[in-house]
Image 1: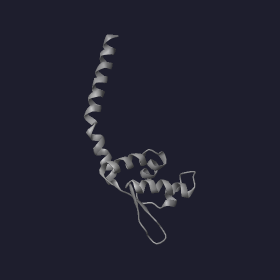
Image 2 (image 1 turned 30 degrees about the horizontal axis):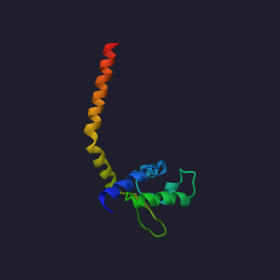
Image 3 (image 1 turned 180 degrees about the vertical axis):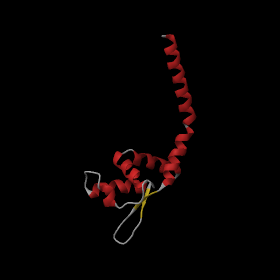
Image 4 (image 1 turned 90 degrees about the vertical axis):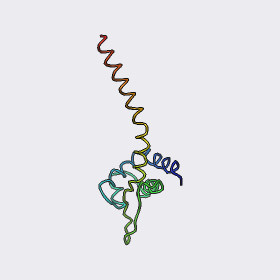
Length: 110
């Protein structure tokens, strides 16, 4: 998978709130599928499908420890997303600065 495909997969995986919640939980440390499923009112197979999407996108990895399959956050794709968004930061900041100046000018005119 090339870098554009990986970025697309990561953004697609992050598009669902359950998957973002799973990543937020994994940011605190490794967890089993059962632990990750606890806060959600959905079946274990449904949570497993969300985990599979995150794993396919490279955002998490699953290990094998006896009968357990602990999940761990993989920071690489998140760093790629941060780098991609940072390319656009100067544009956003310039537009916010322009908007701030316009609002300031409108306030002075009233």
